[in-house]
Image 1 (cartoon, one colour):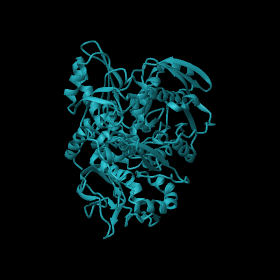
Image 2 (image 1 turned 180 degrees about the horizontal axis):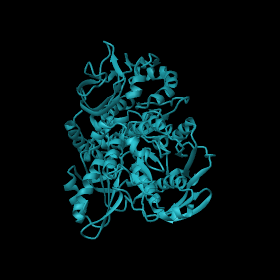
Image 3 (image 1 turned 90 degrees about the vertical axis):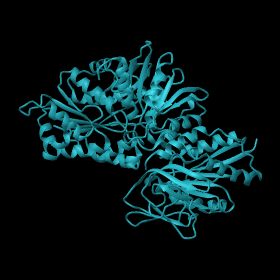
Length: 237
Length: 395
């Protein structure tokens, strides 16, 4: 059976907003598409595995973010090389912020990121919490945001999508998330992949084309996701 | 007089009124188990002759307590009670203890919950720490929750510990263990515990109180409530030094489940329906571990109103693989589809997605046999009313 290797970054620390669901969604959908998922968890101070076809990272608490920050910097070069090679990655919330250049805290301390996204995040004392709706090239994306950092993209940095309801990156410029090559950053919990199956299959297709040269999708039954999305579209921010 | 008006007109009303209580005030806080634990403490104190003032379920903030005070005070302004036992939400506890200094604070646990409200788990934890700092005589702490133990040490207060035995530890994961993928074995605590949950089998539960073992058959269901009972015993034992531990444990036997927390309703066909509240991943996991969800028809209802937590992402931190390959007759609530979607990713089939609570309950009650209705808070309130109406009882 064909195999796809998923690397899940810091599952013990960056796990607070249900982003574990993204891993479940990839695992489940890969199996449905006839591909065997092989899951690798990455913890601080460990070596990265040899084969990496998809990378996932989730949201965590501020304290967890600073616990793992040094390790992110340590493996940063390898992640850059994977990004350049076109490996699809999805970084949510806290991990998205660490994939930008830096995070500036309330007391003006700088937390360095690895800069795969040409962007930076500034702490604010307003928390942006609510049902987020975003238009993107992968269709409408639904999720729930919960962050106080405001992320600002550099002029040459493309966003993942445009905010239709909610705050997204910073509550000001209507951008949500970022995309560099096949690396995606987003503030969408929900979790993002089960609620946006189209996008989940996009990640799978990108990985499958990298590894096998082609992707022959199976038609999956996404009626429940469609029903959940119809519900989400009606919820106020 | 509504609590809000009194609170505005007489800002010291709460402190002045409660200062009359000869045996003072104790506070119970934490993420999970507050309501049931408070009920147990109140009943244990009452069994032993204390006149107890407590807050009505669900109004665990200062205004609710003031409303209940204005109703219960005598015309002279005297309160006919010996002691106040209050369940307080993490956020409101801080405001309450700023006005009223509790003799003891009992802290149950800190778990991820309502993060749309608190932002982070650490925020909720710090609120609990601030509450602990206001206790005048001492604090009672879950020895298995490392966050609470840390805050207890920092507070410098007299601390009494309760916990579960090493053997049972795996049944009661703390927050960090809920989603972590690597299992770490925590170091066994070296604290002297005044109460320890030693063992349970079915409804038979064994506690050790200051080293003496006592077993009891509980009416309260759910293994989490066995842990809550240890907490309640720890506080009651501290407040009632003259009562023997054996009596306290025996007295637990007659206590019924709290509102919507495992309450049983008899339906028209004679079958029983258990109404079980879930609020967060830890609680949901405890419920799945405690009740026979794979054997009895089970309906899951999820709302996303403020009191439920507006973000339903937490459902993905609950492991439903115990139901793998099985089917669930119904999901309901505003987020019925999200619940069904979550189950589908653990290979659990959902036969019907019915967001309307009334229609769902009707269809569910038509199924044969004893049933489990597992529901978030605002849906629970509505189901409760419908079930009471159906049973022909008064609210």
